[in-house]
Image (cartoon, rainbow, N blue to C red; front, side, top):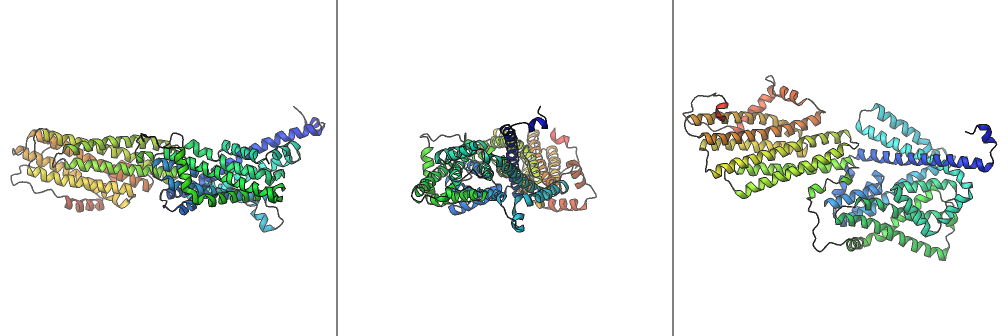
Length: 624
């Protein structure tokens, strides 16, 4: 090891070498902080938006100018054009968005990403004016960091915690930027470093360098930030910076291209549109700019570029490219279709649109992934309800085609449970907000109940099939009682599923009293069957079928109760389900008893025949 005395004896060249090594290490540390700060700030912004910005993309109108503005807004919020484009690829892959809609968003994303370069340009402010000095990030970012830490440590409000993450991310981002700028300042005196940037003033080499750097770190905002940091050396002229900025816009396309691997043809076309837009825009800009330069000889090209100058060039290029290519949006779309044509057979993997919503590209935006999962779960609920309604209709008239439909729906709902369950487990490993975490728990619990309801629908079909094959028929009394029972089941499904799909707590609270009434209907129907059996009005064989039907219907009500209670749990922050139900059904709970009485009036069983016999026989007799 070298002591301080031996270092003092070193030549200037040796000292310069040691300083260069430490400067490189400092620059790497600054870059790491810069990238981490950008990720933290973007993550906080995304959580704070709660997926609303991403979901807004789904509701896109057909007007392309609105698509451009929306692409700008979303990218400015989530601080990444790459992330926006990857989401667009996912939307197109899922069939949620058309390719024509995606073109406008991609154009807008390129403009929205320039907001980061303007934020970073604040580091270049040099002035003795107090107000201007306060605008310098090194002046106010420590205050933001302190506020952010306070929010994270002392606040229980989730939105304040997200704001805290944004503040801390911004502070770390700016500190990393300042660190990079400070570490590269000594490089200004190195002739080799200056020669390297002189080489990059060649438009082609500069463009390739910018594209390569951006492709490696997969962020045009980050690569522009690195270029702005290098401006502090004074070695970066506009002649060098402009080609590099052009290349950075091409390099950022790599993220969408990688994301489209294995996706549908339309998703690949969306990634191709992104590439064509930036390549054509870059070529157009460079041809026009350097042609004009050969005549006008722009004097500013030899001037040292400042961070604000980089932001200006970055913005002018993206805004100019969008204005120039906006009228040719359909041309970009056709070019992408020509590049990735349909095969003659047109046979792509037949994946349902619902399943396509569960796209791994959305996992980086958990709020969006949860919302897409909720939409798919609602579709699953609708198919479970259709299966049960169809199965109940078979109790009145057996139709083979309807029986097959129930079997198909049950198989489809099984696939929903597998796909959704797997996707939700993947989401659970992401950084979720408290709201999204509760919704994730609700979805995980509910999809199992939907699947079990379709299983009971299949059991009802089998019972109806048995009656059809054996020419069995219930008595008129049994039919009337079963009609009341099935009406109550269909009503509880409407209540529970409606509560789930709309987050309606009022509906959820009405489920348990109706479930209690259904329990009573189940017991009363079995008692009445025993009486008919004793009177010779019914056979033992029909008794087994009726008991099977009643049991399946009652269990459907139980699953509806599970869904409603889970929804109430989510709203109240969790509670013991068994304890909640015990308290609800407690004899002292007059409100619950009154609700049950009110509901029972709507589901009165028809009066039994005059010769009814004894009441209160054990239920086991009905099963025998």
